[in-house]
Image (tube, rainbow, N blue to C red; front, side, top):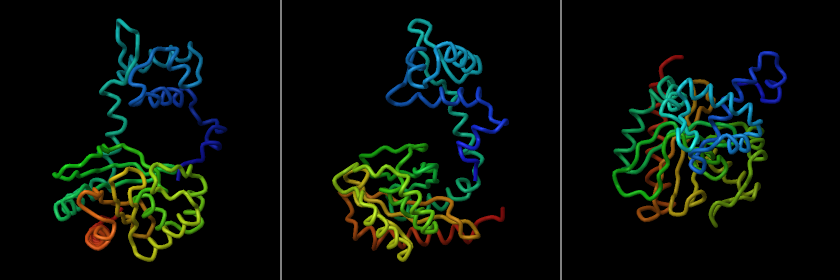
Length: 263
């Protein structure tokens, strides 16, 4: 468990310059693919002079690229190294991929492995269906825990106190008309997942997408993340997903746990 942000900020070991550099890299997104210095300053809350020094350094190191005509900055391909280092070195991803592929072939639908980050689940491995799927969710995508099967599977594997704390810290936004935002209802769904061994979400983050999920645990029973299968409503109902996909998921997770190497 990493140090809490408020504690880390007060530590003499905390490197503020490194923190600011990472903050600048993280402001670039689909809605902000390229920015000039004033825009970066506004997005980060840093002064223009600080942003000028940070962007110069990041450009010199190869993580940012600057258009010589427009003077606008954007991420360079080298920025991918920051994320792909995690994907290449993570033992769970490396060990799970063969099992995810096998599940993908059995159910012929998209299979994902995700891990917790704050109140979200982050996709770290994905085997898409060869059939038509309307939703593109690449590795690195973040989805809220509270309204996704992967998140609920993870929550159901935590203690009640830990699960409740994460729910209380989440913004329970209605992404679709089906999203469960009532805390009592949500806790009831998670309790049901604890008993059943799997979780579900019925068009709660995306319309047309049903999810079934199961938590992945270490040898001591601590939850590490979750595997989920995404089922389009054009081919599945929630009941058929529970009946046909949940047993395959449970079988996959049991096989994964049994074969996990000692760490």
